[in-house]
Image 1: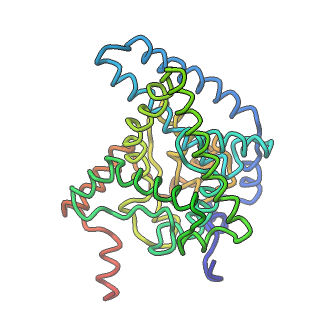
Image 2 (image 1 turned 180 degrees about the vertical axis):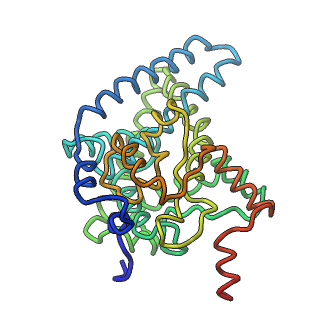
Image 3 (image 1 turned 90 degrees about the vertical axis):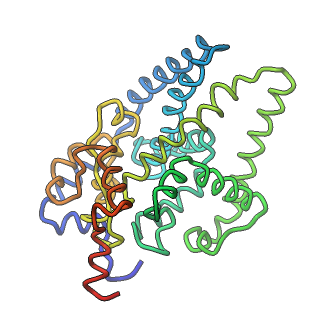
Length: 324
């Protein structure tokens, strides 16, 4: 990282709205909140899974699978927090649940952790942020991204590459050389696990994983794409955390599902603050960050406004002023 780039935590402290003592208190980790969260999480999964069972052999199974899938794809939120080691105080629990979540949604945990580290270092910077989702060029591109087809193509291509022992130049930038084989075997073991499940299903005729897992994940992924766009898409491609990230006010159920990641700007300011302390951090930073009071829908209204020309992108204005 360039020497003149301030870390998000340093930016937060320099804003004068957060003291070191307050930050230290907010960074305290605990196993309890996550374990309580997980109990409700499992109950919700059992409830939506039961809907699939009760609607089997009817057309209602499709909305039931979609609802179940919305919860399943939100394992990304839990995995994301685990890669920051902020879900549990006990370190190995973060690795355990991060890998479980990654297996559920086909997102190898070790690779994601290294990729996500660069995302925090170079948030919203072109050619540097490996997770940057560019503002679509038009409505067709907007809906194409929401379809999740580009996402799945990228994921299958990525895992296929790793199985073959290959990395892109970008991946070589953020993955330490000594971890190359770990990333390769992570992908191989994941595919071996999926293949074993398919073979077991074929041998026994028991295809529950298809109806209770894989199809719901595919049906639910557009919802995750919809949510992921609200974090940075349409915000200026600048280093300042106060400008390049949105926090979205959402309903309690959605806040539960995303493990408080709707407080996304706060998370980028201080990624070592655990999920359960983000609402408190929000109270400290809400005057210096970008807050979308209308929630996810409001963020998409903003994005669509930029696409249709009803709102001039702030980074486009900056480029015009600077003559670049």
